[in-house]
Image 1 (spheres, rainbow, N blue to C red):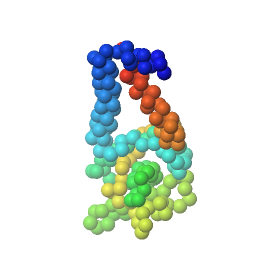
Image 2 (cartoon, rainbow, N blue to C red):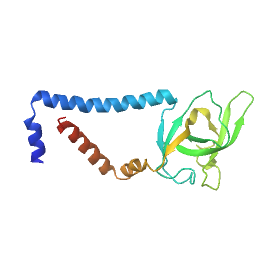
Image 3 (tube, rainbow, N blue to C red):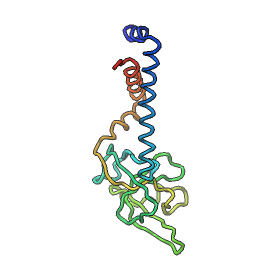
Image 4 (cartoon, one colour):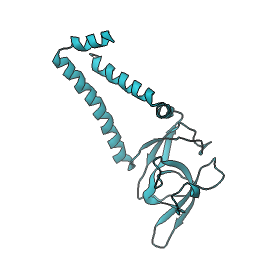
Length: 177
C-alpha cells in the first residue's frame, strides 16, 4: 500500500491530471460505444446475458446475446425475444410460440421458454395474457457462449465487482504509459 501511495506522491500535478483524464476517456469511450450500439441496433439493451436455464438447449445460463429491435420488422412464431414485463426489473429471454394480430394492426405475442413446460402467462403482469410490441427490448440475432458468466459472478458477489473496478481504476491512474 505504501508503494502505491508513493507512486501517487511521486507524480507531479500534471502527471496526476493526465492519468485522471485517461481514466475519464476510457469511461466515456465505453459509454459512447454503448450509446452507438443502441442507435445502430434500435434496442435499449443491445447486449444481454441469459440469467436462467429456461432457454436450454438453445441458450445456456451465462450466454451473451446480441439484440436488434427494428420496429418495421414483423415478428414470427419461433423467434427468440427479450422483453420486459411491468413490475419486473430483469428482462426475460423466451421464444414466441403464438402471434395474434387484431384488425387494428396491433400485434400481441405469447412466449415460452424452451425448457419450460407451460407458456409465460404466469410470468406476465397481473391480468396480462399477451406481450405487446412496446415491451420488447429486442430479438436475438447472435450469441457468445458463457461470456456473460463474468456478469453473473459479479452480481452474485458484489464485493468482487467493487474490488475489480477499484483495481482497474488504480491501475489506470498509476500506469504511466
